[in-house]
Length: 99
Image (cartoon, rainbow, N blue to C red; front, side):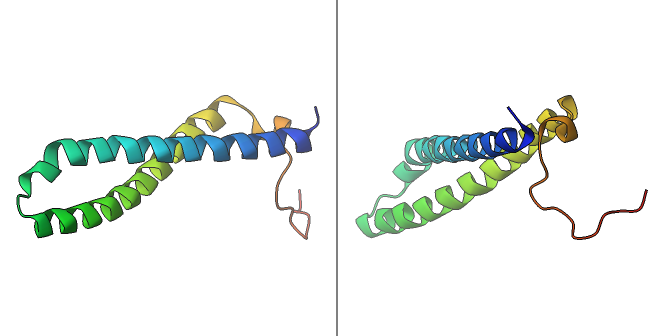
């Protein structure tokens, strides 16, 4: 395989991996919220408000958490492999640098 194919497969794989991490965080945070926090609201109106705000907070926290985990794991991967050897640059500079 050439560098462009490697780059395309890496981007597709990383995107799918990031989506899987985000969904996993949604389920994990949802489980934690509905198991430990949601039961403390007794009135129906309070439960409805807690449910609505809980879903918003779970969604935002899952995106933020997956972003940080993805960046950490990507940093570990980039330390192990030489990206210039296997991947083609996505955005090329208009001007070539002086060497």
